[in-house]
Every structure is written in structure tokens, then in C-alpha cells.
Length: 191
Image 1 (cartoon, rainbow, N blue to C red):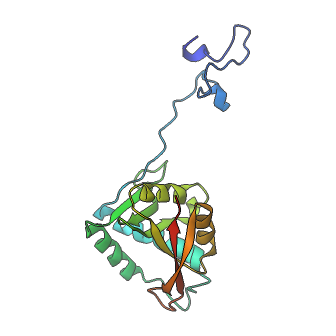
Image 2: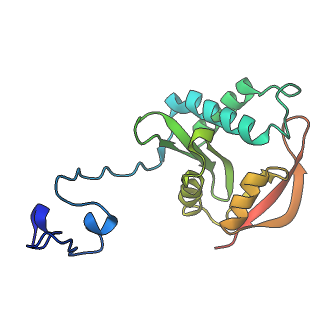
């Protein structure tokens, strides 16, 4: 059997010729629309600086308000924007972004890394819990040697995710770059 009736017997019963067929995934192949490819991370460019800054700001405020209360420590938008300009200009740093599935060009996640360190990872809060951070880490670690990263000690959401994905504390710590200079801990990826 082939074509749109491949999943139906002559009696109209479902019969799936392969596990990957549309009806095996709970959809009939009759009149089915072809699936769109899932978006992939792409290299960021200078045109993405504003989006990178916006996504990082939204994620930081949502996840770290208890560490950096906005009323006491306004988000350093200009400093972060300049850091993205510098990261994109650095040939040692790869910056990859993920666009929204429905709106190409709308950046929803990013990862910046060099040979050994994940420097920045962020997902816009509206896109949390969709696997984007996991994908971003996969993109980065596949191109790194002995991957490491720094995370705020009190960033419980991120630390929990990292540890679930195989990252472990190295025992090293340092103050963060922005006031009130909370503690960051280093994690290493255990393949």
C-alpha cells in the first residue's frame, strides 16, 4: 500500500505500515498537511543584537528578580547590549539563536560559547519548558572540549536543569559581574 490510503485497510480500519507514519503518531495521512521542519539554531549576526539583549533581559528579570530586585538594581541594558556586540565580533565565540517556529526572525533562545565555556544561555520566559535550553546546550557542547559554565548559586531553576542534564559543580566559585555581586558556581559537563 502507498499514498494517502496506506494507513487504512479495505474495511476502513487503521493499519500503519511503519512506526514513523502519520497515523502511527495519532494522525491519519488522509488530507494531512506535511509537517514543517522544526526550527534549528542558527548563527547570530549583528542584526540580532537587539533581540539577544531583549531575550536576556526578559529571562533575567523573570528568573533572577529575587537576586537582582529591579527596584534596587535596574537591568544594565546598555552594558549587556555592548557585551553582545563584543561577543559577536570575537572570532573565538560562537553565538547561536533559535527563532520562533511561527515567526522566523523572532529570537526566542540563544547560546554563546567558546571552546571550553558556555558564556551565555537564555530562553525568553514565554518559551520556557519547551526544551530550548536543552537544545542550546546540545549545540554548544557538541562543539566544545571539556565544557564548563558559571551559574548564579541562587539561580535554582537553571541549576536544577543543568544538574538534570549532567552538569556537576566543580567546587569553584566567584562573584558575579553585576551588583550586588552574588556568588556564581562553576559547573562541568559530564558526558
